[in-house]
Length: 333
Ligand SMILES: Nc1ncnc2c1ncn2[C@@H]1O[C@H](COP(=O)(O)OP(=O)(O)OP(=O)(O)O)[C@@H](O)[C@H]1O
Ligand SMILES: [Mg+2]
Image (cartoon, rainbow, N blue to C red; front, side, top):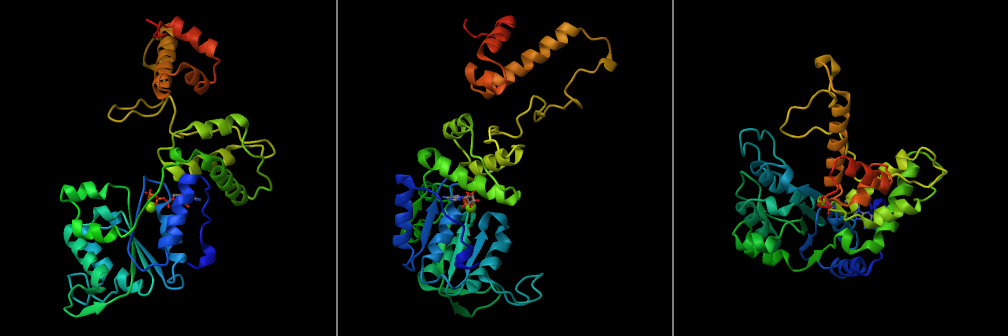
């Protein structure tokens, strides 16, 4: 990857600007950095920025997700191995540290490494020394380590699930990314950025913006999945907008949301609808049961906020109140 392939970073909220400032300050130093933040907050993007703003930008940026590989393989992934180091090692192989020589190594989900791997990582960042598996020869590397986690590492260290000495060393500088709900000022500019990218991807000429109601929904959501969630919601809204000349209106936070969603643990009937082929049905009772079922689910989904529930079901508030009264579900006591 070269500097020009860098993903643009969007965000001008004070909370995010101060992070970017910290990134620019620490980037040129050849010291380890830890990037911390909830899922989807942009940790990987920030790691890339740290690399490209450092003097190492022309050397490789190597990435490895520590949670994606078994512990046994992780060690050889990181440090490489010699022929015959273990049963399957028919050839020698360079590890990620060697691949990153002169550059940066991004270790994602660092908290999922074992204590013994952590000890070896500490040795590389302290002394630049390691051995390939199956070799006693000590090798030298010059690599800057960038770690990322969404875990509370000091807490894990207290519980002795993460090495304190490695934590101390990594914590030379800790960059903590604010969740999206703490920087609402960035929501609409991020949304616009992702919408324009999706428009291009769909080969459409025009993105007519979001309707006022859609923007209000985007601003009001709590975004537990942060920027990644926003990106998905926006891309879905753009692609579902069948008339691109009109502003995008439909914001669907949960594509799985459906009255027919299978419930884990209970066997799902094939359609979710009572089947007259199974025997005689009482029309009125069946319809009431379906209506109360959908109402209950919708109320729960909308945290019993009746206005939201009405909106969610495409009903007016008065229509919803009428139905709730009919089924004695008003909850007004
Ligand atoms: N400030 C931003 N500007 C533009 N795009 C962003 C920004 N922050 C995050 N993104 C985009 O959001 C998505 C998630 O970001 P990223 O993968 O860096 O998050 P993460 O914190 O590493 O998530 P996870 O904890 O799940 O690994 C990516 O597609 C990324 O490009
Ligand atoms: Mg990540």
